[in-house]
Length: 231
Image 1 (cartoon, rainbow, N blue to C red):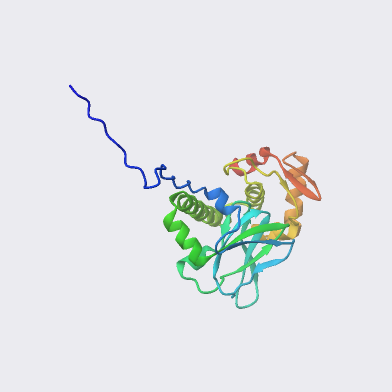
Image 2: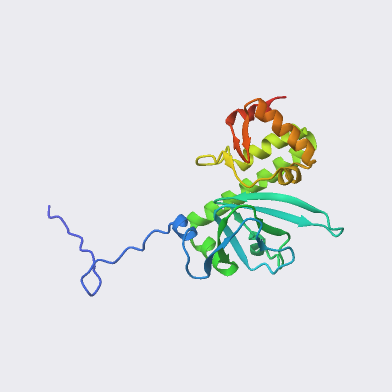
């Protein structure tokens, strides 16, 4: 029986069509391009302020950022601490016209600033980035819920231990960052919801037990988990 040969049509030039290069979300998040720029901030430098126009999404390439909110009476509270590979300022994608809080670098920080329309376009067109972005948002939502439970039911000691472990990124993908630089006891007290005196007391306790090493910068040991897991 004769075998029928299938001939594949080539472009008029006779060359094979070029394949579209695969989209790499990490390359996108580490480089400048259309409607995205890289900005660098020093410790304590404001990235954006509460009430500013919300026109972009930001991605932390390296560094650390605190997000604070001030109420009508002037009281300030730390809502979140963001680290490398975190997105923030995404409220603009949900229609927020203004920033709901202030973002301040708490270490030398490099961020990728992605204009709102560009972020919406890429998230819609590139599933690898949209999957990563959605996973990040879900993880943050879970974190906020856990923070609420932590403040409602756990002791100051447990809240401080959990905060240190979260800042050191234990439990996240990739290697943890056990050395915390530029995190003051005042900042820890604001996050935990207590006084600097109480934070100092428990930090000294953790150091004596070998859970942390504290000499200007904080080294968080995995053994600190025992405080969080202990009933």
